[in-house]
Image 1 (cartoon, each protein chain N blue to C red):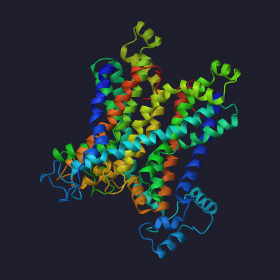
Image 2 (tube, one colour):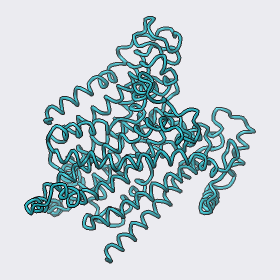
Image 3 (cartoon, rainbow over the protein chains, first blue to last red):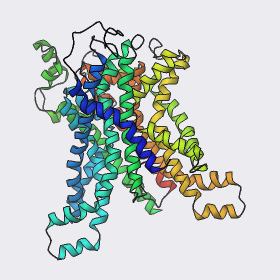
Image 4 (cartoon, chains in turn green, blue):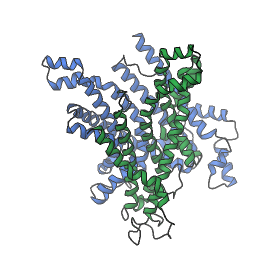
Amino acid sequence: MTTRRRFALGLGVIVVPLVLALLGPLLTGEPGPRATSFTLGGGHWLGTDFVGRDVWQQVLLGGRTVVVTALAATALAYLVAVPVALMSALTRVRWLEELLMRPLDVLLAVPSLLLILLVASVLAPGAVGLALLVALVNVPDAARIVRAAAGEAAARPAVEALRMQGESRWRIAVGYVGRSALRTLAADAGIRLTGVLYLVSTAAFLGVGVAPDAADWAVMVDRNRTGLFVQPWAVVVPALLIVALTTGTNLLFDAALEKNQTDKRGRRP
Amino acid sequence: MSGLRSFVARRLLLGALQTVAVVLLVFALTEALPGDAAVALAGDQPDPARIAAIREAMDLDRPAYERLAGWATGLLHGDLGTSLTSGRPVAHYIADGFGPTLLLATLTLALLVPIGFGLGVLAARHEGRLVDRLVSSVTLAVYAVPEFALGVLLVTVLAIKLAWLPPTALGYGTDLLAHPAALVLPVLVLLSRPVCSLSRLVRAGMVDALASPYAAHARRYGVPGARVRYTHALPNALAPAVQQLARTVDWLLCGVIVVEALFVIPGLGTVLLNAVAERDVPVVQGLAVVFGVLTVVLNLGADLVAHRLTPRAGVAA
């Protein structure tokens, strides 16, 4: 398949869940009275869910949390990772560099879902807490990748020249080294967003960071499983939307990455 | 040789540090949080008697560093503590859930290696042609899908619409080997992501290796294609794949937790989720340490093997 066609395919796959997630909450009317659990028909296009709510309305409402939490977590992860990586790449103080990066190496060893469940056993994190946790889990890996790209740029003679010209550290870090690392950052962002979407929805499925009856696609899949035999739509529709969202993100970024292919040694297996 | 030895020493040191960090992190996240832990753990039942009981059971009157020291010494002696809710030793919980999880992990790994390598080699052999495009697109798409979404869709189609397989392992207890049909869907779902990443990696390595001058030279000598592929090209595609195999441990762990919840399999993941739901901190801590240390050890092993395969590449340590 050509890159252009793959790009189109990715767009086609992601557009439905993305539009539903972002515009869905605007399209829902007033929630109607609760009907019987797990019924089909009766004025409900996709039937009713485990507490008798209209499934279509829940579907419209349920995408926003997944998408917004994932985007916020990705942004937060870079907000911490990029400054740490740039500082560590540009500092000439060996112990500071070690101090910044070594703890992250150690953190990499902890399985991500485990860390989230650990915190969930003591606190009951809300959506904000979940975003913070997922961001925290992603910081070590993101910092390592940005650090590798920035380290290469920081070793160039141009940086030495800028230093001798008396340019400020800020200018060198942001204006030159940061800009050089931007391409790697963009490539990493797609892979990271895919991973974050996976983690956010899986955590929600396991009941972390969401109310037990929340309008959230992953929660819908979990809570409506009991009625799978009588009313499969309450599970199948949100599950398909999650599949389309994650697959589409991955296809789209992969095609975009190949389009301006520069670094052939991408991390993606 | 000294290079190899110093690499091994450094990697072992990192592994030891990671183990210590896992223990410290588990303790810090579960016990050293601000506020009164006993009140937080009592949760929905803020009954003074229960709060007092939790405080007593977890020794919350003692300072944090004393509790950490006591817990860590216990860990060194293999004592993981006792459950808050049932009073049973945590080790019993782990022993109970160990069988099904080990079975799932073994089956998945045993299938993952041949399928992952097979698909990767297949795609590389037909590079650019229909088979390759098909394998590459499907693996790329499935790679990103969360296990629970894929799982419920497979259950809906294969177990409920077609009634080919049981939808859950409910009622089979821990003796899953006697009911192989109940294992098909869980293993299939667990395999989905690691197979994709492994086969993509093998494909990329094989494509590079087959295009290299030494492979072309071997062909010019008249070495048969299969021999070029399997004895010359494949070993070079192996090193990154071995490392990836270790990284999938993290995924397998996430996957096992989700799959056990989805198919109602009474393994370690279910034990962990129940303990999280009941806020049974000692059980959560014990399981987290076991899982964390396992991940550290497997990553360590994979890095050492990968280093042995390609001493030039230099693995992060």
